[in-house]
Length: 92
Image 1: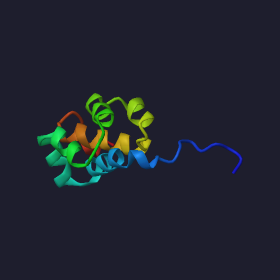
Image 2: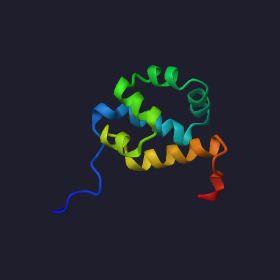
Image 3: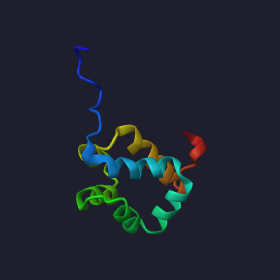
Image 4: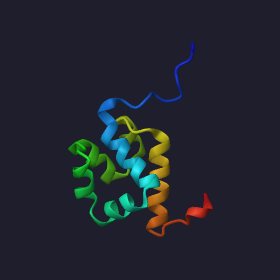
């Protein structure tokens, strides 16, 4: 493959961050725990303070810069917005 990939493969150091995003995207029990107490949930995953700050900000570019998979960032944000009543999930 001569072209650079569309986005880089997530680094191992971003495992906890991507695990959190994956849980928000598709695990209802995890999402409920996160919404009830995001700090405790992120701490339990072993996320660094910088990763937790990026999650709190919701800044897509900051999350991707920390090694988050872009698709997980999008899907986790979509599920959180739907859960908070900011947009119907079925819309997408």
